[in-house]
Length: 90
Image (cartoon, rainbow, N blue to C red):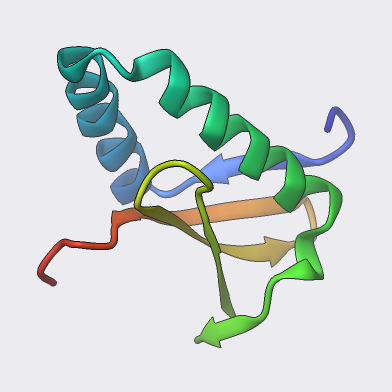
């Protein structure tokens, strides 16, 4: 993962912060971050493994939590646009 970068939009950074607080509150912070890290490693190593869903954005579902990572492939690596709970109203 050292040769490819993962960057986050400001919106994604806010979502990560909210999730960090929430997961710490419910006592699942370590479990959540392990799941998230596993999926980020998968995206970095196999960025095209997931289909394009909309506007060149690919989506990967976390294994243990009901969240999805929305990302695009860039020349420098991966840009994460959003981290969304699948039960949210948009």
